[in-house]
Length: 83
Image 1 (cartoon, one colour):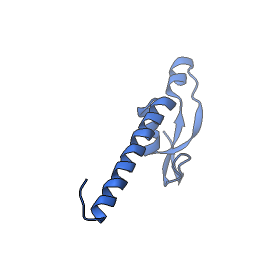
Image 2 (cartoon, one colour; image 1 turned 180 degrees about the horizontal axis):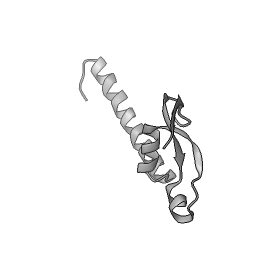
Image 3 (cartoon, helix red, strand yellow; image 1 turned 45 degrees about the horizontal axis):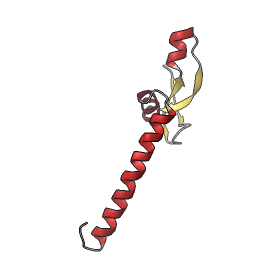
């Protein structure tokens, strides 16, 4: 797998990038389709969720809920109270 140092097309982080491609199509048709250059973190994350928009949306929703809980907790802690 070739790598280069630039900006990730998903998160815009400056990092060593890898060529993102569809493993399923490669296995099914023998065609390697280049989809872009990603940092390792984004490439692994997309692979982990198998490029499923639904799975990624569920994860994003869970992270959003967690962020809201942490903001609320920080607010209480700054006031010197505990929820």
